[in-house]
Image (cartoon, rainbow, N blue to C red; front, top):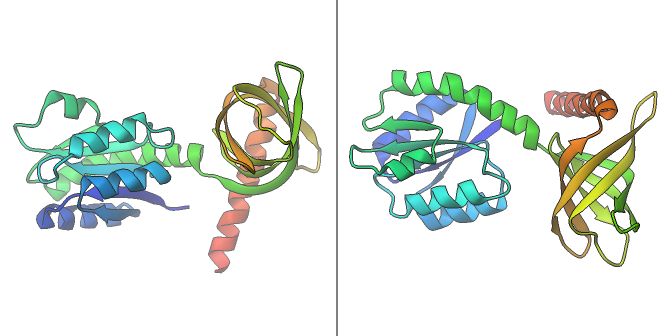
Length: 231
């Protein structure tokens, strides 16, 4: 459940400053020293934040562009670390701009603001495991049965049981697990599919379903925190 950020740098002094500051804020850092490996990691995983050294790392702008164009990380918090010659285009892709040398007091001030944003993005994206039957309905009249694999505030992944997978916008319907069952309905976009599963991003949750859906997510988070506490 903890926050995690990618740090892209080959500057030993900057690495030490970031490790100290982010550790104090209870944020894990994953280090990469080249643009290619940073792009590879960001393309296959959601991260709550990024720290990109635009001074020491060749290809840093390409990393920023890939992050901002990705499905899973386009809303993540980005720090760029720059020198006085860094272009405006690079700064425009960042939420926070730090100039070398980075004082700890300066970094702490930015982290006080950034951690709240990262926590909100983490809650929106974090996927809780689930095992709930659901139905998908298409505008064409077709319906598809499946089972939820994981769910978050922003969407869900499911296994599907049809010979083909739906595309475009669908209606999602399932019974919220609760002592007082409630039917959940939402419009969602199919964002990825493979032979056995698919991912959906919610476009609109029916107003009457929002409080019950939030209560279910809260219960899943409470269960996760309990399991973590006893491990």
